[in-house]
Length: 547
DNA sequence: AATCCATGGGACC
DNA sequence: TGGTCCCCCTGGAT
Image (cartoon, rainbow, N blue to C red):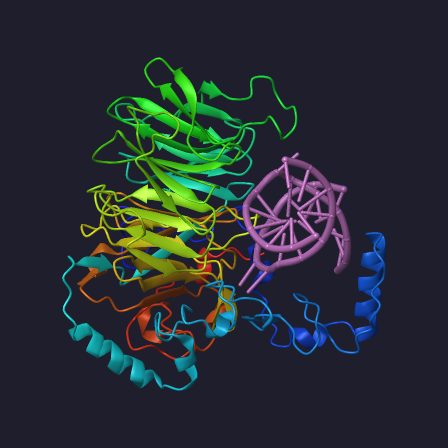
């Protein structure tokens, strides 16, 4: 059993570890009057003019007498945070669904905490009873699809031993308690999350971003990593000794026009072939027995564009799925790879961050695109012209974040449940938090969301354990482990949405702790006690490190 | 404490 | 095809 099994108070599961996270509290302030602290109008204009002069541009010819919107520079409204709620610029398209005519606040696809994916305008016209009623009616609607389980209780632990942001996570294929992590700097972390202090970091595996961590069947002591430094390495987990398998930049750095980076990687276990793809659209195959590059590089996406991801079909390993910056995901027969030989091209509105075959049957495809849509194709043997469903979800990202990827729950027999971090924040009791969403991809419904008041950063990297009810997340430099108690998991046909808010500081707990529950907080977003027990805080005062 | 910047991607010219 | 500017939620270095 992970998490040191002990009693329900989980003493072995230390939330804070030595040297971990002094700085993690920085952005937790939530002034309700941030706008009142803006400098006066004259200063704003002076600063703007100075900035413009600096850029050697003519000064503005108009003098605004009011505060201006920082997004559109017009007066009359202001975009930005009001407390923990972000107010959109009304002149811009909705930040969530990208359609004009409304702001994120009133987007029909808004993930609003009170009522799932129901359009937000109802927010102000209905009481919560209406939603309970509606939900109960909905529960009566029969479902054809197989059942799956959603979390009912979660427990959380975190650690910070990377020095840069986490870029990828992978559970060890056979050792249940081992999590591997890659970071922006090129380091590889190995963490036994049951024995908190048992962790290693290998600092010289790569020289920049680790984009993929994979294992090959047969030797689970060796871990394969690909990186934006253009190399694939095979590292012995025990010794940290690495073997260079593949190097796309043997000449060294000669500028961005020639520097090749590896973003996609997967292993065809049957054939012992490792596929990697670069930022110029090319696919490479490496024989894992001889560690030799085989064949010629093949252009699989628009020339000069980045191939973002690769995935081999779990049932038909010769089927290869790729996705790229050219707005396409493509299916290939790996035995007959050549230019223009793709079996299917799946069009997307923007860059495709990820594309995955479903983990059990391999028959479905789940993609995440920067157009803020998760797409599902229900059968690779069916019509692939258009997706079976498009789910609007906030995962637009800027360059400072690891791209969001919706990933299947490998344990869900119905191949419906997926997990993905959310970009847009919600106001959770005065704090802006970015939850991790569990989505039923068969209906598009949000069935659960988890977040921690100690982690105010965005959590783009998420990985579900292949066998256990555990979610690993990477949020900036922090790695989180969410344990979803198996005995508490419910099987449901129409899942009720669950929130898991970890409220770990005395400040945040103030007045909201369920005194009967041994320190477990039990609040809903408005600070009222909720009907069901939703969240558990495992951070006792003694377990916390205070600066 | 404020500012800079990383080698991103899109829109627009 | 290339240059320029813009961007809601970074975060380390200076």
